[in-house]
Image (cartoon, rainbow, N blue to C red; front, side):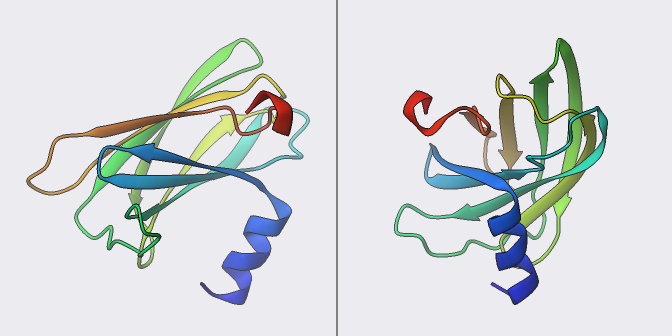
Length: 121
């Protein structure tokens, strides 16, 4: 992980969820008070934390926030990361459904509540 990626993770909220044989780590903007274009990042590892290449993979992140539903297309962006952009506000009740398909595999899905209090996760 580069220093910039590490800083992004510190400045943003993230959650790790199992998805079939993978783990997805979702990173979203945590300080966007109003809906605007924000990045959506998903890091992919195996259950032992080993980075998995995302080359050839694609997916979506469906974001339910502030009574709106938007979908970000996720495309490979680095070793084990997919990236997309969506117009959303950082609200505590945000829910995100991530679905990723790797070449020759079926889609795997994970559900996140990235901005909920730690007690609610």
